[in-house]
Image (cartoon, rainbow, N blue to C red; front, side):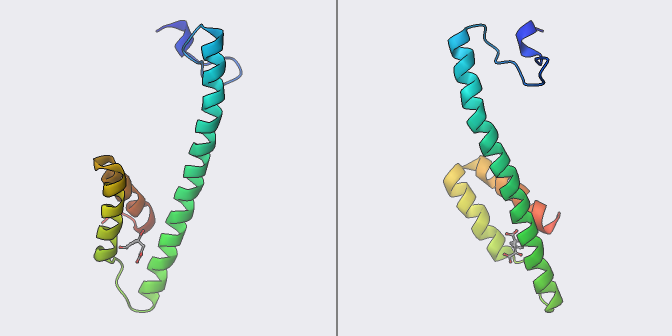
Length: 101
Ligand SMILES: O=C(O)C(=O)C[C@]1(C(=O)O)C=C[C@@H](O)C=C1
């Protein structure tokens, strides 16, 4: 393994380049990537909690655990926007909320 693919002593991952300008740019770009990842994690958790609330509300009112037409709508939206990966992502999102089928 190359020395520049291990972690630095401060715990941050190395940039993978020895060129200082490129390393600086990479560190900068990674800041935004980390912000986006944190936002995605928070949104993921919020969505799962909302989905569970919807499920509880429906079950307590005598309704069904799932609404497959709604799931199809969501899967289609993600597929249209992101292609096959979107479908996989939507399947994971749905599972995070309502649990496995
Ligand atoms: O929208 C609903 O009716 C939900 O229960 C939420 C949700 C979802 O996570 O989006 C979860 C389960 C249902 O089968 C459909 C959609």
